[in-house]
Image: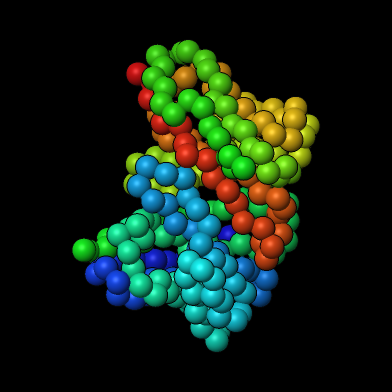
Length: 113
Length: 115
């Protein structure tokens, strides 16, 4: 599996934008970039995913570099509820064993009031 | 929809005891899986199922059994608990396997301690 690299931790202030980076220099052409987050004492939850183009949904935006070797998850206005561990995960489009999610250690986001 | 539910929320076992962690989903999802999460680490896949009657091993299957007799339920059995199985266990489900279409939904977790 192609690997991802994320900072261990980041801090933000409430109501400010947050940019969470992810490096994936060995990404293949069929890998989708997925983001999940895990709030304290909860199971992970899906945030967003994309392939080449930037993506937006109600939770966040995903900006993907032109060479696809890095991406950035953008939370437009952080709230205290966004404090969580954020995981950047590559998933091949194909099925079979690629169904599994390979979690790294993620980035612990702290949001200051 | 209740989504993915897990019981119990907490469990303490003695070494050598057996038990079953329950997982159920009401979204008619074909794909279900079990992960474990140890302190400071990401989740690791234990077993998964791509439909009723079909299961397969993940990264860390030793010491665990699964079966899938219905679409809704995917129980995880610990055969003879060991302290190394102290962890938080998450069940997940998905409507499909294609990475461009389907996300996974996770349960709230079961915190297991083996003494």
